[in-house]
Image (cartoon, rainbow, N blue to C red; front, side, top):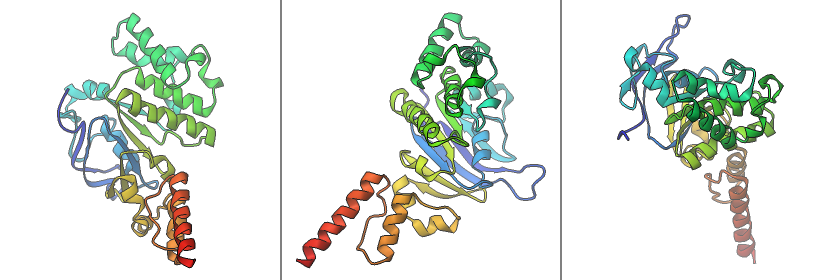
Length: 287
């Protein structure tokens, strides 16, 4: 296995032809292998451009993007780059190409020249890992949005990349579909040890990441653990971003004088525990 970061951006700028200002403006970023990194930002912040640079869909206007040390601008390395970094797009209909689920999941490894017997094993394993094995003979157009997203994820998993980048994977899904997809994302990191980069504008989807990168105006605005980033409520609001409802509640209580409540309680249980401790302290002090 290679040492060092799996993804590295060195002072990367990217300009779209129709835009005067850069979509990415001098970004330096390293993603460690095996990590789960969430990239958060509004539309236009540069996060989706960043995602497309990670596997050579876009090439930087300035600077370098390195994948396992390979420069994405070197055409001879591009196939290896895309074998290393799999991409799941916002709209699964743009990624699903076959009329049967298992055929769709087999499409990428077939094009990579994987042996047929190995493809069968990869397809079955990928579909089971995202909970879609029982739908292997179904027609993709008949699936729900969340199911289509999971099939798209399975198609990338069957390639067995070292890293998977998911660009807004829960966009346009209902709460059930979002939970299905996020469960699959967490499984990839936990059970497969895969590097996961999750591009999103939903704060709640970042809670379980190891690291949170906040993008704004084509730059990295904040970078740290979710607890460390979300506890900086005012700095988050400078970019027009909210914080998880749990942090917003605790921050509001602090502003109203209800003690020095922690702002790093991200889950509902952590928030409830923090409020309960505050109430117990208040009760004891009044007696």
